[in-house]
Length: 194
Image 1: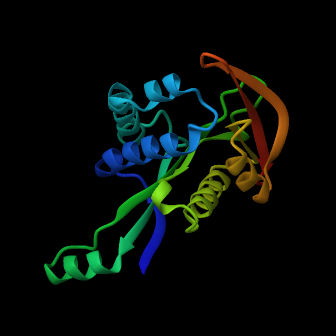
Image 2: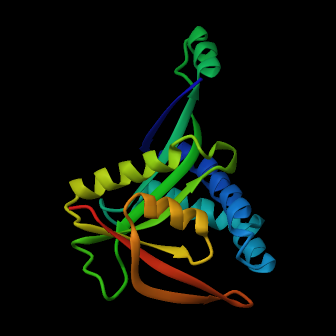
């Protein structure tokens, strides 16, 4: 059995955060994003870019209201082996969530935040990591004085839409269409956290 939790991301987490993002995108987005754009988003050049962006998010966020959280598992075996060698137990990053003040022009960034990313490694789904990340994000946003949160979701990502709907999120009528060789629709979801 593994101990689980959520904490602020650290610089040493950046490679695992990047790998988790790429694995989650490849696993989850292939059903509705065309192959070529998905490869561009997850290929080696993209991995380098994402790694640099995640490192910047950890070491030099644009504001104290920009955060990157990670879900971690600490394996009992890893913990007992590490402790027997006088080292702290090892933690494996298995998910990530990032948030910031909302940037959409129709929203007030002083009262509305945006959940930018919420991803769980495909080998670690259905263990509560997504819920823990979402709850930790909301806790931080409440501490920062936000009253609502929005996020953009692919319209065909039924698993994510269902997950967020079960947590009280609903479409707020905003939509956008990305050109990925064919139109890919996104919808904005919102929830009140006041």
